Length: 355
Image (cartoon, rainbow, N blue to C red; front, side, top):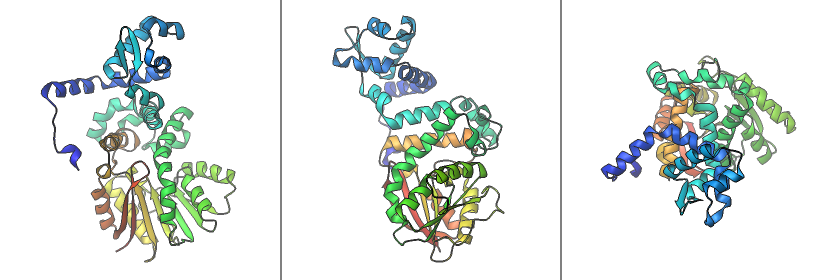
């Protein structure tokens, strides 16, 4: 892809970019404070006329000093313009304030990742998620996901669902093109996909395979939707290669799931999917691959999200290049029958079968 083939920055601009990286934690926390303390909103409310520092102080219960240091930092960050002692909001400031994806990404970084990322280097060196200890005493985040503090749990699920929810409506007609009677939702999480499947096709029977803690959350949601008679549950720890996936499903579905595992673990999971499939059964994999993105910003976000897996989630997975996934499928005795890019915000769908 062409994003990374050339570097046209001058030396002075490249040096400035280096300083942005050096002060990146300051930039993030200052921006979050400007958002949460309503300073961005106050400046936006002033419109094109702008607002002075003194006028902001009059409107907010924050010291002049506190507002001054934050808003001056915001100038360098690119959130504000300053003309004749009046501040106005830039386009970047507008997106920080109003863009849902930006808000969700920032909250995910703050509530799940920020403190733990002090230990990123150690995570790389030790091959373990050394930053996870700030959240809990688990080997992987997924073991404790259901018992995270409510604020952190909300930020994690908002992040996870924002990207998948935008893709689900688009892929449902593809998955149900051949009218599968049974579907296995591997890594079903809170059950949102399974619920949408039963809404889309009133005849399909669904089984969710996941860790016991996640199944409890899913079961609560499914009971509330009155779907307990159509959705079953199969408790499984897929990190244990001796635990098998249930057979008898026309479709096996994996959405934003395999990126939670190392490549060796993916091969193990896909091999068990192969074992559970009949020759005519289909496997659908919905993932975000950084090399299949239309926009550089999307590739950037996915590349950085890989570090969440390294430092917080499990220590050994990432947002993969699509060739990595194809290699895993090949090793598991599966092949890609069809691939569709541009689904939702950033997803690719692989329709797979046995070789």
